[in-house]
Amino acid sequence: MKKLTKRLVILFVTVCMLAGMALPAHATELKTGIGVVTASSLRLRAKPNTDSEILATARGGDCVVIIREVDDWYLVNFNLEIGYMAKEYIEFNDKKNVKLGYAMFDCSSNVRSAPSIEGGIVSQAPKSETCFIIGFNSDWYKVSFNGQIGYVRSDLLTLLETPYTNYGSKGNTYVENSAAKTTESKPKTTASSSSSNSSSSSSSSSGSSSSSGNSGSSSASTGSTLGERVAAYAMQFKGYRYVYGGSSPSTGFDCSGMVYYIYKQFGYNVGRICTAQLSAGKQVSRANLRPGDIVVFERTYTSSSRATHSGIYIGNGQFIHAANTRLGVIVTSIDNEYYASRLICGVHVG
Image 1 (tube, rainbow, N blue to C red):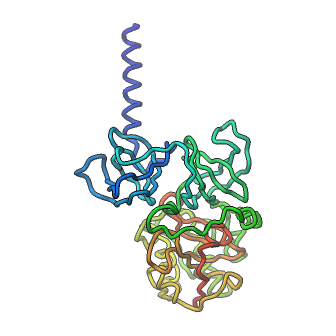
Image 2: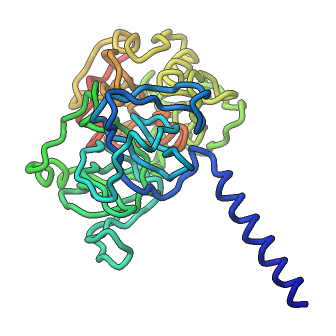
Image 3: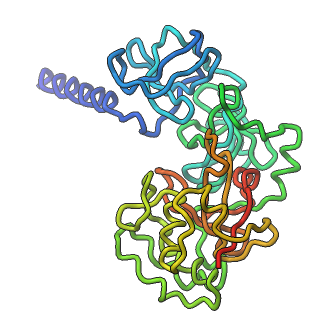
């Protein structure tokens, strides 16, 4: 009986180890440190061997977020790309002050006074709110949130920017000594904000969050203006999945693809990419946004393009957009610190 029990225990441990090894690169897990590239250049590869596909190339001094060690390699996040880098060319730091940029909370989370669950709760952040990462300490990110400095477990945040220290980064919009002034007055929002908080016309059309292709007809919206009808129709896609290059309910959307699809249902071709959507109508300021206006942003990722993200304003300081693969189509405050600092303009169509 003892031998049988021992064998079962060994079998269980083996299965657990294999399951851990099989975690995909995109799985959410605690990060272990910050790496600094020590070679003049270092390749990011799809697999932990020198024969695998090259995904990107880092320069000396660039920072990576180290997820875990895999033999002679590190699984890392380099400039928002997940892959493997040779361990011998990376300086490992379990504590480091580094501006990794803005990140989004994957769920409602506590911001603590110390990098431990024993740390007191400094603030509480709702899902899809953003914070600014200014360091790393033993599996925890050091962040600035709502004018306060604290720590968040590293498996609870999705990075939105390339580290500001890295070559080609277009960040550096954050000023530490003015953080409290620029964030305290901004309202907190969650991805679950219903259309009843956006506009009276939007609230009548927020029932569907299915990712099926049966999206309904634009003629079903009853808003009195084109913009109100567009906003109400857009709310039907809240909860749909994000797919890069997607522009239909049956496949999923990327940001500009969703804007393109929605306006197409009303007979307008606003362009398929964010830069084109800048010229789809009259450009308006934040103060003059109306429901249905396209909102266009810059610097949401490293790119030479003038515009890199878009969505549709639904009223009451909120917009709906296809955010990323993890969050899908969500509603976010236009005054969210991350997006407010990147808003180019609104575009009034029609």
